[in-house]
Length: 568
Ligand code: ADP
Ligand code: TZD
Ligand code: MG
Image (tube, rainbow, N blue to C red; front, side, top):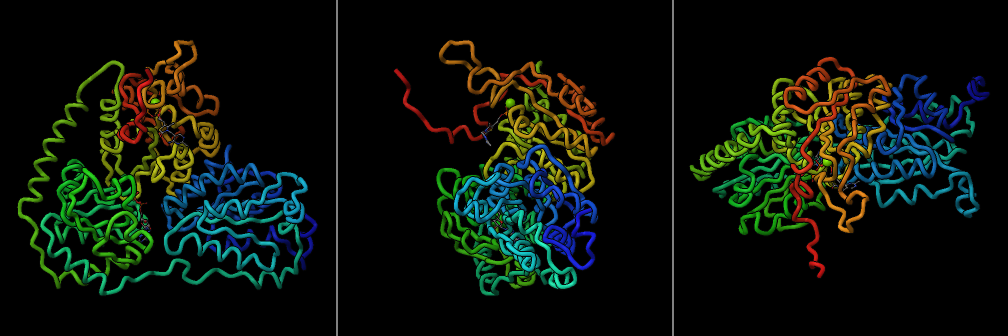
């Protein structure tokens, strides 16, 4: 027990910070401890905040970020100074890019030494370094400011467009003593930290009158729509208007993928032909070819719903901007809807249906083609069957072919169940997202991982086993990044840049921590192992052998590779 704690009339920054977090509804912290935050984690645990200790800060940060996405409350990641801070910063940046509310709280060293660059233990000017990667970056220097500092941090993370916020807490702050009664009086929890942004009536009417002129409308659902948790209203709007919808990756399941109006299996056709597109919490970034070029109808008109006015006209003229939070915007749209009539082409939906049928036949042929070793499609057929039967499960997914093919093959039926590489296409979210989803939901999580992707966060199987989390990991082991048959162009004996060991037995890793291992090479074996994993709720790792020749370079985004001159 610290001297301060024994002293009834005094408290210190560390104790007060934990109290402030608790008062603000923070019930879990993901992190890695060390100087100067070890006691902070201990005290948090003592006060009933669940502390999940990781092997690497990046995964702790990813767990925090996905907690934010799933709950609309900031997920908290705790890191030590300098290197721990930097390890966590990648996930903070990723949270910001994706619009997930997350807070990285990091201990830091002595300001006076840092500022004169005199070489303190783990010296780094963390608050300023975090700024370009975070939505906001703050430091609390004195215990009297803890309540305000925490409130600002939370408000910055969840209000408007959510994002990652950095909070610097110096070793000195944590140990500074303060009168207990006076300090506790300063604590408060912010009123309405994520206020509604109600769109103007004018913008709603303009958008609906634009829609009333559409012949071939389309709704694109993005992860902003999934985040908004206004699922019923979105469903009602889509079903009332009869407009086909296309879910972006993490919006899959907002309406079930087998919904009659889903145009996912006719994606190219609808993008090329739609004359009016409603972007519902989806940015017109690279994932939608910036709304331009051969993928799109050159005369397309956009209606865009976004909380961030800076997203309007970011890549393309937006004829119908609706700036507001999606829950309020959907309410307003539904209210105004009866005042408008629509005159969509009568054969728009049926032509989509025809294309869907043709593409589904092609897809089923691929899924049903057996091979030895397995390829992505016949392996994913099994994953699809399991998830069709276990719909409430969380699916974490990363890799290249492993990512793109899973997204296309495996149906989602509930909102916010598919968690993946997101806007940056980043590798390394896998185990952090799986842990965050399992801890937050208490439900089983299935992580479908490329063998390369898994390597970025694989050590966290230790965390999964230690906390006995219901996570089943499938490693699609094709022996490489994209493909396992790369060549070393020098003719030398080193592996090629894309090669990884195809003989690696990833399953054996989890044995070291008491998890359940499977090594599978057929569809039946894969199915049995996944079902055993998700129903036993035991930490499980399945090494699934995939044909090294099965994948394509960069999965579905081969065209983004720079084109080089051939070397004569
Ligand atoms: P996707 O990758 O699924 O296309 P993006 O991350 O590109 O989705 O876009 C999500 C958009 O949703 C962002 O521009 C963000 O500002 C917006 N957004 C996030 N939350 C809300 C909300 N509650 N209301 C309205 N817009 C939101
Ligand atoms: N580093 C980080 C942090 N993110 C990245 N996206 C990459 C590197 C580059 N990269 C991709 O874009 S996908 C990928 C890498 C390394 C791995 C693909 O291999 P995989 O999946 O084994 O995970 P497939 O099934 O073999 O394609
Ligand atoms: Mg691979």
